[in-house]
Length: 126
Image (cartoon, rainbow, N blue to C red; front, side, top):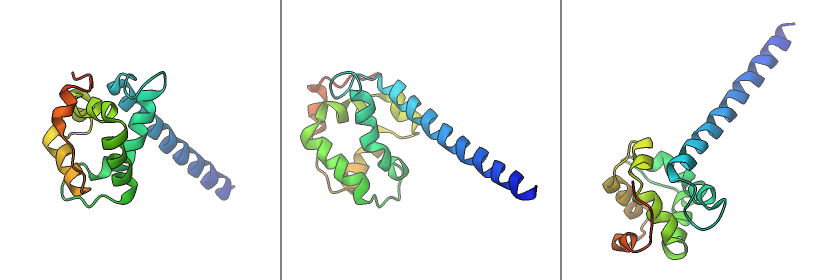
């Protein structure tokens, strides 16, 4: 009987973590407006690429390749998506991060980005 309660507790705990993860992703997608990086699911794909960077938004940070590689790829391949995130004040507030801190993450990854492109990339700011 005790092991059944333990097993049920583990299942409930795990399912709450999964639910929390999906809820957080929905919040990110909602803040993105779903319109970056192309068609229907573009906003979701865009946000998912940068989820590994979330833990490294505040200093001190030493982001791993799982964060930096997709970030650098977005600089070269999907500026509209990156600018949409960078210019979205509501999304940045969700992560308690400023544009300056987001730029520092680029530097931590050794990435160089011309943020003036974000004024021309159509990344919808709020």
